[in-house]
Image (tube, each protein chain N blue to C red):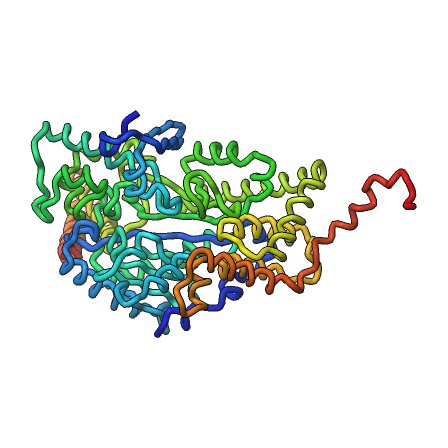
Length: 370
Length: 168
């Protein structure tokens, strides 16, 4: 089956059931596992990698949670397909570069996915919309317990699950949440917050963009340490920090509205203006503007429109998703035109942000009109 | 400033990360930063980078400059220096000494206390039971409760065969 027929439509993939989940976009838990005695993927010859793939892939496919799953070897996917999977956060960029001897399995609900022969033999992830870190851990723990009966894991009672990189040793767990923090960025508190979270042994990264730049004001918080701590403690610690980040973001939003409402409305109004009227737009610019528009939705400034629209555009305007809709290979410039066309079209029925309730505070004109 | 990785080019990418209140700095040149995936914020951690550098020296020192080769997969310290990753699960056993200090700086502890595969949980439970029974048996003999000692001895035998059965 083609991956594009399998994946849910972008609006569906972005659907979050809880209204509380305005700030936390998604939660995920990943476990790294390897098979005993076989060399790790980075050091293995092709034959060994194929052997590992042929052992793990059927074991994963046979899981009850994997009925009607999508399963493929990485060499059978086109570069565009792989890029789509990266943009959906289902595989890493590293895995997208893999070919023969690597594989990918995704369940029908698109909330459990497995990378075979990425950095480790087996990397399984559980994904959940919104703030559901504990649920994600439960799901992946269960999957791991079923798989351990079918696969001979490399495990040592002293060091735990043995991984290619010592940074993942022990539990092999990476717990993370994706957060949208525009007010902390606008109020310039974000660096301070990032440093405080770092001190707790957690990493904060911009999800898109290079270096410290966080495009679309989207950040990923994750644990760094994996050895000498219980999985449940790591999950608990991350949940607590995320809860605090939500509170900080909410406070920052309230303060901004109280003290600098003009600035906030100006940002959102301009973002809407450009998105709804531009004729050329880079993916970088679109991410930053969509982030501001999303904030506008959170503040109920876009009456009558569905906020899922912004989340959908966030996905569909990414380079590979855009390219997918056209047969010919697009240049960057062409993509920028088409992206702007798409934005104008999708936003044509969204009326401008309703900030009128505050407009009575506007200073009255001191001269009557002629 | 020279690149920490290739030690040749001028470093133009400077990274600082605070992990556990410890500041870690690294300077890279453009090509090395690309190669190490610094431009991929989703997959990058400075710990991984430092690992490839300091860790390799650590491994070398722990063996007194002697070249160790993993008998299972043929992996050497030189490979570790290049990749910052180990060769196979057996490598942890053979490079044990050099890794110890490294793990200390990276993690909360150096001993795993998390989840275990069912098989290990079983053997661990059995082993604890075995040790407890052994103690009871010794006490029974010391107290000259020979009837009790005999039944304890039978229980011990049973456990021992169970333990043998679970070992692959």
